[in-house]
Length: 96
Image (cartoon, rainbow, N blue to C red; front, side, top):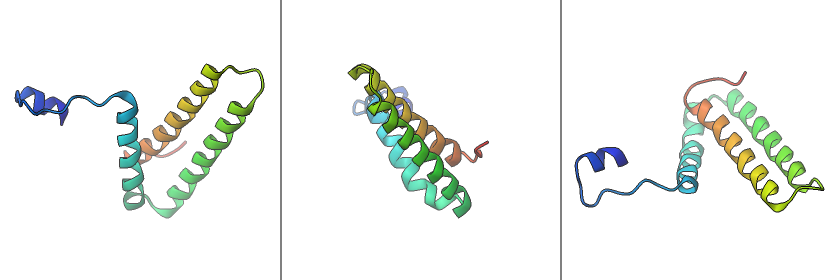
């Protein structure tokens, strides 16, 4: 969408979203799309993986000896991993 609008030299063409905004858009898209395209068994499996990622992330965030930057990295990476799992499933791939 963004590239086509710029190629057409439209003055009102939206700018590319920043990384966090792009992540938020993808999460919203996956959250809205998953229930429509995935069978219940795969959604249950996805929920299990998502819960495991959240629990692991929380344990790492609470672990002693990490500075604030490392804790933020853990939070960001576990969120991205969860999003990647959802995106893979939306794309029709299965968990291995």
